[in-house]
Image 1: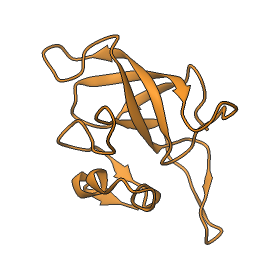
Image 2 (image 1 turned 45 degrees about the horizontal axis):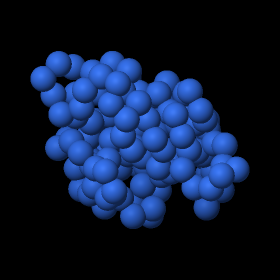
Image 3 (image 1 turned 90 degrees about the horizontal axis):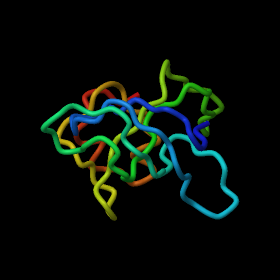
Image 4 (image 1 turned 30 degrees about the horizontal axis):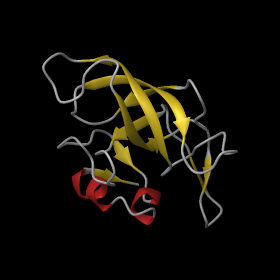
Length: 123
């Protein structure tokens, strides 16, 4: 469950390390986001001379969350951290060229095929 002001780890090679959620997209009353939801983030910590800079506002998709996520078969999936992947401006394609860590299969079901193609482990 990701909400306003949640600090997130960035799981790609865009140069951003830590980002903060500033908006959950999907309706005026939507307060929280979960796996596969798109949010607006501001980069709090980034490496120098990379694609994404400090204080940059961009869109991202949630790929890992600490709160258990219920799958359709009744099982639950849970990760050790909250992590995102930064997206291009208006598309569902990732901005970076690599994805770090495991990616749940719900990301493919939500239509993020570009992220799944870059992932080394899908669970």
